[in-house]
Length: 302
Image 1 (cartoon, rainbow, N blue to C red):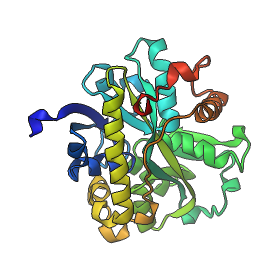
Image 2 (cartoon, helix red, strand yellow; image 1 turned 90 degrees about the vertical axis):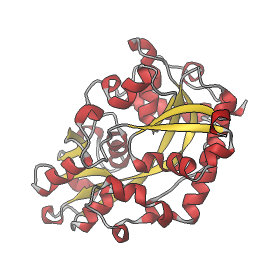
Image 3 (cartoon, rainbow, N blue to C red; image 1 turned 30 degrees about the vertical axis):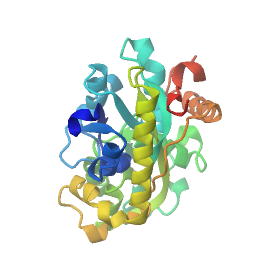
Image 4 (cartoon, helix red, strand yellow; image 1 turned 180 degrees about the vertical axis):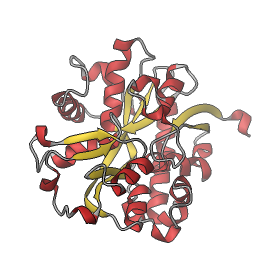
């Protein structure tokens, strides 16, 4: 009975980041673990008609973070570097603390896309040219990761250009040299004849406050692991979440499901923390002074 299930409220933004969460709910995997997971959908840069609260300069004023800060949800996931920033800085800014509680399930595809009319064929041609991202989100961090192997850091010029749809439109108008996009917007761009210059995956991290206990998190992660396996076996069956997000700009046949990559959640290791934190710190994208003990809590595996 639903009344016997433990209620957990989690937030989500974009389907590519939260696909295992959605599948675990809709396939009954959370219920099998004794959980009633309520997913609160918030505006994200990947939703066609999203508002801009998800893109505010102050990350803690963005919709998902604000809901968590107000106690309206218990848990969330974002790109690994974004969760690092939020977990490190929440306590220092007086916001509700959150810790990294897992390396997440979804490994979201991001791509740097250009307009063939611009005749950009290799990453080096983006030197000192504007690349559309949204700050302190996966598109921002992944763009830096992708390009720093080809350009000097000072040659990478990112600009804030709004949502996925808005930055794709800016690319078509010639206002930017490239745009950093995630699925389903990479597929939308390809449908419009744009060129994928390079792409990679951005792993999610799972975050939660101290109120959410280890056994509950463990049950959530077991359900998400089952969902990751289900997506891998039949990606087309679950493609509708991404098609819906594109708001009529993409047909199912145009979505490249080979870009859907998910895996079982894992503990967030000290080695992983050191590597990710030091890289984020080296770009000046996170506050200094954080420790593994103060930022990470692998209680789901204890």
